[in-house]
Length: 203
Ligand SMILES: O=C(O)[C@H](O)COP(=O)(O)O
Image (cartoon, rainbow, N blue to C red; front, side, top):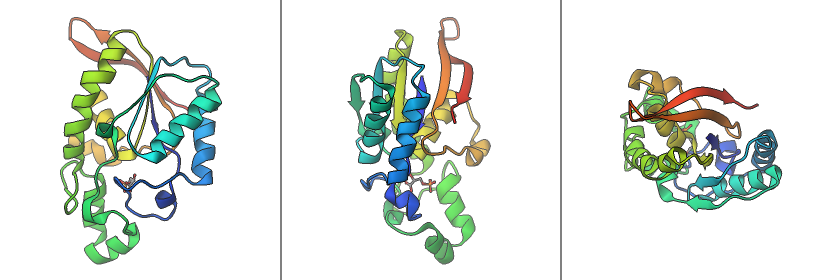
């Protein structure tokens, strides 16, 4: 299984909160996506999941182009980025000047802080993990190799579940754009859970 955050988007470059706003990739983001696909050439995927947002969908398209083959694609809004509510569109440094660095850090990196009218990471996880369990996990259990292209916070919430990351360690969990995170996983019949044999970040 591979988890991949989309390439740089326009608002990543402009340092603006993005969330559910559907902004495109930059040229650098497209290059990152192609590079990720080239790094993944030695793997064979059976199915790919992505969000309903253009930056993830385009990243996946470029990855498949660079890998040299297509797989069936499932797009689902459960994998969308965390909804950043009233912060969406605003510059992250400007917001820090208004609300203070600490408040912005909590909104961005804590598990429970909820940006005004938006989702906390916990809220995001309440939609991503059940989706993961109902779809992706079933594919994995059935022996399929799965590629998931999504977003910084939707992937953080899934990785937290997968790797059993405790709440106080979540702020340190950073997911860079365009770097495939490859897991060798297996289903532990006795423990009735997905286990990780190895993890590597392709750069
Ligand atoms: O929605 C966003 O702004 C980005 O995808 C992630 O932002 P963050 O690093 O501020 O959580």
